[in-house]
Image (cartoon, rainbow, N blue to C red):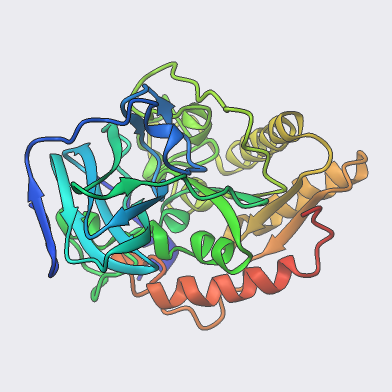
Length: 365
């Protein structure tokens, strides 16, 4: 029987309305100052003025409104979302399309509202047109950014692939509906540390080799710089506000979890060499981008942990004092998510372990 790691599959890519919520097809008028002036986000977005476009999972938008209702303006045929008001989830939107979704029946007063993209839909571009207030209400000043920032880099394990599933056997549709990056170990860890965060995760992608050798012309590094994953050559323009004090890299499961197939340009030895070389280059890229004060935490698990540890040792020996290795402790994980991925319970356990590990690191918060 193959190991659980070898069963991890490449992710493939209506509205569920709760009480007090409605959806209408016409979008509300955008704020005259542009959406970015009224919402806080730390995610990789492309600012088009009246809309913000994005692709990565876990992208969230936070705003404040006064009144008895708030509208959420979206154009997204593929992704799912949670809408949270005053800290409680009040609606889950499933591939909502072009709509303004209204949350009604709020007490008259000021409210915080948060919209979060649950799943990874790299083949599609999502658009958010802001929060709008009902007649008599108003959109208030956006919430302040948090001083702490964490970037999580990874594959399906980091994206929260199928983490809400009640079964390991899932169809593509079930994977979409049961993936929730907002309860992934990264998002949970960041919220415990009161940090803004990015979940830059792409299911099925590896550092040099993708799951089962698929799509050999690309790998995770092909997409890392993008805001819009399905737009070749796209490059995210950092507005100057994203300066993470911590970057967590968890890549390698897809490189090594499946046997090399006939026709792939690898042997076991050349794959290891290519992986280590690419990993070292990727860490150098992150160091150049974020500077010497950012802590880089390289995560190792299963068969690739030793390779990651060796890359980190070499960087430390070369003088990089803020790169660290973390051997992921998978003790007690049930891997009950879709296709033997982390379950929601596993993500909570890993957030516990990662948070404890970070407490011992000299991070310059």
